[in-house]
Length: 344
Ligand code: PHE
Image: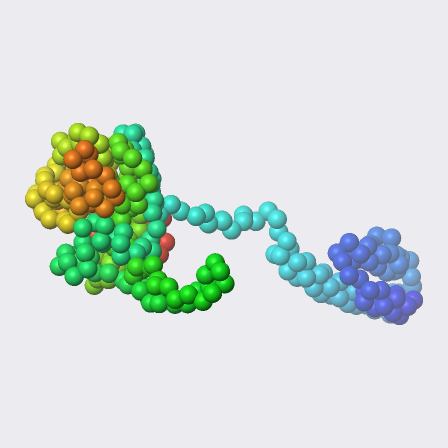
């Protein structure tokens, strides 16, 4: 009898693959109605002899079955918990990282809004420029010493070389390249020329954009940075207009507290030229070049210098951001460190 129970149990336990079936098996072999329990219960009806013989054997089998069931139970539970780790839908998910507005983008947007509110239009121009727009038309001819003010990244192009082309009659013809030397713009001023060539005064525009300089990098200089050009052209434009425009601009960008001053300076494309300094603590910080548009610039775009006047200014957007957000080093804008970016 006991031998038979043991044999069937051993066979059945091998086929158990989940907890529900295991419990059914336990009930079948150790439950109240199981054969083994029946045997143990009916021991008292047996003779002493029989009781002594079967009693311990039945107890031993019960223990054995219990041990095997426990072992199986542990195995199945371990297997189940492993499965659960993979599919536990109640666990909090990993946070998805969202993109972040760069401080330079943020301040540029703010600057655009300020000038839009003063009725300026926003204009953009190419980052790869030619010599004509970046220098010549701005009254900086080749070999002009002022070219040294802008250390330039020149690009390798088919500059001024002759090449052969098939003309309209199908004949080979040698032509001289119309391309001027190409470069990465060193300032946003070339967009002054591009805009005036295609528009008539009066107008007032700003030109935010990326510029490039072949310079040594330090805490306040980068080889690429951002500028904001401003250009106002009309009949009676004067430096007084300029002063009121930038007064409003500074007030809106920094609040009332900012103090600034004009200082005479030189740029080939303005006359008179000046620089604007902002007061920070005890120090004056130079942040902007400006002046009345030079007659030669008007000549270059075929405006009549006797009929129109203009003011132009150029300001470093990075500098403005450094002042506004209290950032000590311009390189922080460009090294891609998320710990920095996330603060804005
Ligand atoms: N383009 C000049 C610069 O990059 C700044 C400037 C703009 C000065 C307009 C005068 C007028 O330094």
